[in-house]
Image (tube, rainbow, N blue to C red; front, side):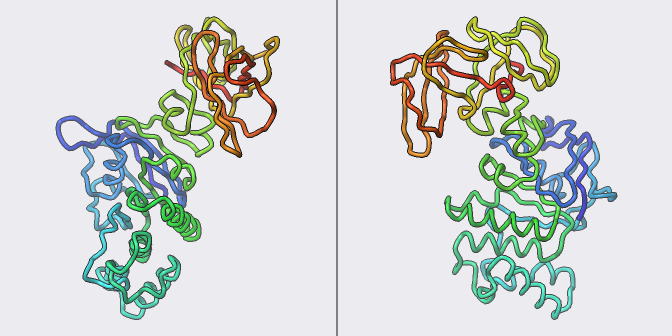
Length: 355
């Protein structure tokens, strides 16, 4: 197992780099997810870590070992691919044994190791089957067992759940999470699915156009987004244009104007006076019957109400015209559609960031 250290990395396929001056540390034994939309560079970064794409400049280390220019087959990496990449003419046993045989491991050790990892992924009784006789979830678990059986320093996973249906995705992601924690292997997972990233990761790196937009725990990215892009990509968020009359210091409560109305919100980074973006998660907003607004409350009009049993979703319009989404799980009696209400912003949970 090893910490992965990426320092000022630049990678590309043609004249223009896909990844430019990229730095990141992935802690030993953690599951780190590279999250982002298609084309953002996350798979390029993963394949560079694997050794499939050469580095233009910068450094890549596994622990104390410099692997920047080391060939892929010498990096001691296990890889799980989106399309499983199983040999169709080999049994489950032989697929899992493939990497061990390539390393000239003796037959008795191969028998024991393959059996152990098939049991770990719940496929001990499937050793003699061909991949065609397995479901998609079972094939992906075979691919996981094959990657882990060689006991690699680092495990890399490229969209491993994208070919599975919703129910299987949950089952296989739980298998991956449980095994990763049990073995303690440093793992890098690539996905575009925010729920998958939030559910599985110790830390997440949100990638945008080849750069790191924000890195942190799942709670950091969801509850403490540092940009409008991060808030919009991870979870649902109300993002409205606002303004700052004065500069705001980092990690301070800032005085914000929203359609001429005063609010306070937390600025995660220093901001100049002028146009900004206000971010509020729907479940962090509170609705109450109409009355005299108190601190951090604005008057609004209920435009739509959707009752979903455990929660109710409202669309509310502020006096300035902005429409926000509010989610509540309580069952208090609130104004009806078309009536006025008060909307409260929690200053510590509401963010103001660069526009």
